[in-house]
Image 1: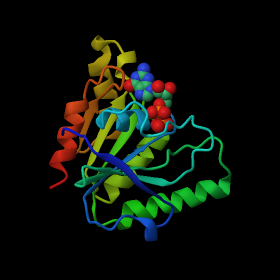
Image 2: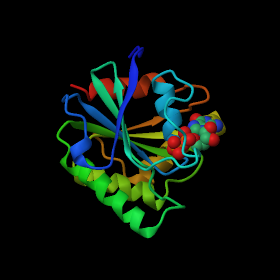
Image 3: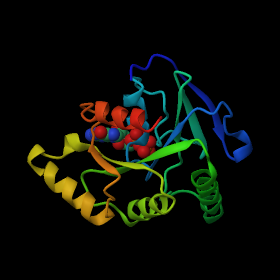
Length: 194
Ligand code: GDP
């Protein structure tokens, strides 16, 4: 998709604040620092539209990015939060769960994993969770510029094996540095907007 117009419409902490235009939504999930903001910025051809997690005081909200008035990319707060209280963590859990399990216009989710390492227990649990709710899923293994090309097949088999990726879901290698995989991620999103 050629993206020219993007706006960050809103940040929501509860379902009352979700947008109501009815555009399809694709949610992005991943551990803090995995590269979620970088993926969003790559998809929309911006350097720093989506804030990176290192931004001090970044609030933990669902961020809805309006793409060309036809789609929302939804940045879901990173799981495995190191620096938040137990209470906050529980609240994010409830918010994320409510969004993922009740949102009618949610057409699919992208789970980011770090292509340099084996998927974490959090990654695996998140995938099991969305699979249970039959949410079509694209797993994106990112930071692949840090992995030698001759190891890419190993990354693919490791992620497929440890996450037990369903046949109906997809795995895509990606790098925000080289933009490799960007078109494939957009193709998956466009296929799931229908
Ligand atoms: P977020 O917390 O998931 O939103 O992660 P960010 O997008 O803020 O990225 C976390 C860190 O990883 C930053 O220092 C990024 O520059 C770096 N990063 C993200 N994507 C890539 C990538 O594809 N390749 C490399 N080498 N670094 C990346």
